[in-house]
Image (cartoon, rainbow, N blue to C red; front, side, top):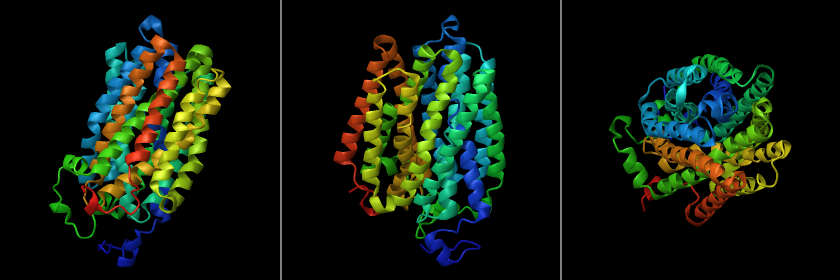
Length: 428
């Protein structure tokens, strides 16, 4: 690739622009501080609604799952437009800042929201804003480092993201133990301010917007008008990957939320938030080295065997949850999430980039596939809540493990290795 970029030589563009301290460190810190903001309240929402508001205000596992599903569906409908917005944007850090402010405002307002409708609206706003983060961070990274350095840099992004999650979860656990679950909302506000400061330090003029959307040197950015749905539907491996992402999140999304609800029942509301934070910390500490390892070895080992390992660990984790409801056991099992989710986070943008190289639809395709995975996550919450109410936690965890096993079989049998994938063969 020898596209001319102002301020860079052809040799630099061939391997991607060098990541200097001026660009690399702010990107590190942005991933670190956005870790908690980008996912909203996550499992803390279920703990707050069940343990603090509880049945006296009409909240149980089923109603909580319904709120999570509504927000998830709204968020997934925003995924593809969010990707399109990032593809068209000429100032991606500014969009990240706006989204961080919206997510934080929605979550900080939750203690003031009364009734099912207001809670659902606040979390839906957070979900729409949160749809921006994944494509924006991938686009900023690709535009800064270029295609050849993208996989290892994504691994580094994920490592800082998981480190940020571990630190914020640890702080949430300690502060919630001292001040109660509501402190999580204020912690998120502080992290959002820090992420805004980091985003402002990323030099927008060093982001190659053509490269950031997956264009190569032979493509005129203004001539790329292909529909994103045509890009996905005519690209069989990409369409299959969307189905696989749906399956992964259908199995994975409700696991931590279910564990948090189980802890709220068995350990009491005073310890549930702190124990859930311990679950998150355990997983995130594992994710840091896993993401770094994947980033360094994915071009050597290939994408497929690593992704199969993620599905296998996810299935085993679901089964192990049924062995005991002891809080220490549950926290220990949750550490396995660090392997599965760490692999998924590091590989997702890399595989999409493999399959969309040269199309100019990298971020919009990410959004379309994120719609599929968001649908899986949203349905997962309702399925889990319904099964828990009707049949108990053991049946729920076994069902989630079975779904993970189906996903593993699907990937093994039908998904090709995408390393070195040729865009000319996508629809063959």
